Length: 546
Image 1 (cartoon, helix red, strand yellow):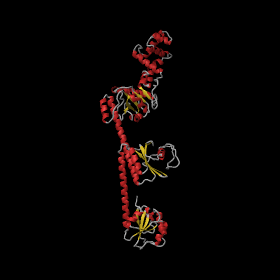
Image 2 (cartoon, rainbow, N blue to C red; image 1 turned 90 degrees about the vertical axis):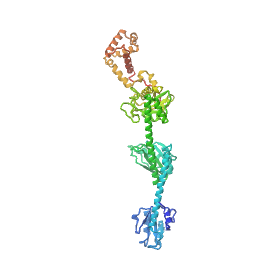
Image 3 (cartoon, helix red, strand yellow; image 1 turned 180 degrees about the vertical axis):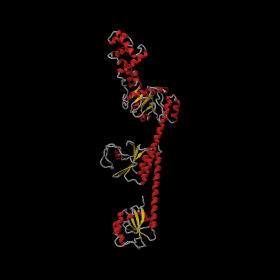
Image 4 (cartoon, one colour; image 1 turned 30 degrees about the vertical axis):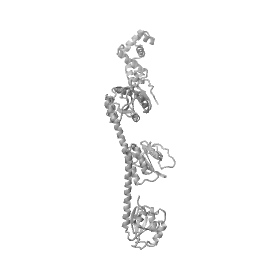
């Protein structure tokens, strides 16, 4: 803050003459010193100056001269005696007293340039002090950033530095951390308005715009909101065009330039911490994927050694493998060893080491999410498998219990169970958990992809279904297979003579070009008939849902 008029008076031994009787009048800030002998110097002033003059052209009524200075907002008028006037003109003193303009006598031995230099030094000292305060505050913020609390510690320190409150918000505007007394209603409303979301406005508080039905506005580098007794600054966090979060600062007083410098420093530290956290998390995820690759390759000891060097460990057998969509990663990795794997050929990902279909043929390939082609694989102890799976709040497939040597097979089981949990539309209910054992209990069809089963059934049975009016061939074939090839039992089920059934089966064999006495042929035909009977869709597994 610039030096006060009182400070200049004391330092330069100036004598108050008039206009200084009102309380606080000498507390006015002196922003500069100007010297002028013009009858009207106001066109060359900005306001806040201490104007010095010897009164070379002063005579008669000086009321207008003083009034112009007051309107311009000068801090005070210094009159140098001993040059044009031996003392301050009474007319000037009277006009200054009436207008409330501080009038000071500058002794003959005090050069005007000395007054200017003194004010300049005071301004420089004040600026240095402001810079020092800003550097000290930045140091305290930096030390706070190094604490285990990280970004939360920076927010707490920032609130103390500004003498108000501070808060950290995520990219959606949800509050993640706030100090006591944080007035965030106006902040969240303004962020919602700029995203084009409907907001409810209340009377009073800071001034914000009304909600718009259209698209949102681009977030500026800094947003200032003000209202009765409150000043708020909101800044986005993140280096890209889309903010990854926000922080807000509020105080009952206006922010000084030093405070703005401190706020900007806090923004830089928060952005750096956020980016470092993202980088560290990405590295940790790549490491977990590499460990999972080692486990799938049978390198269990090496995998445990890598995790152990970083303070992590795998659960002890019996183990259960969980498979879920990429959206469940954060929930699963908070409670278990979890890694992202690419789930189809050609899917490359920096965090998965380019691993495609790690379970082998018929494994996780095809078990992909609607928006992310990767699958989250978690390895948990059997005792907590269901609890962890339910905590994912997303469709999850669970393998049967296994040891480290059976992880590849368990991964395939979890992938198939995940497909069943997602359902035919690929979405599934949030929190639905399907265990592979439940699929196995439904028979072979429970393990097959519904679309593949439908296509297989249509292709195998096409020669029979296309055979004109002889639709009884399909039912005869079913009865023959259900009776395990016993002619009398099958004929009795159909209500026909066994010779009639033999004729039909010879016709079936001719149309299909297959030998019905071969076990493999019978198995394929039974599978095709069963898929057709179920409407080409396996029965829905019971599963678990929350």
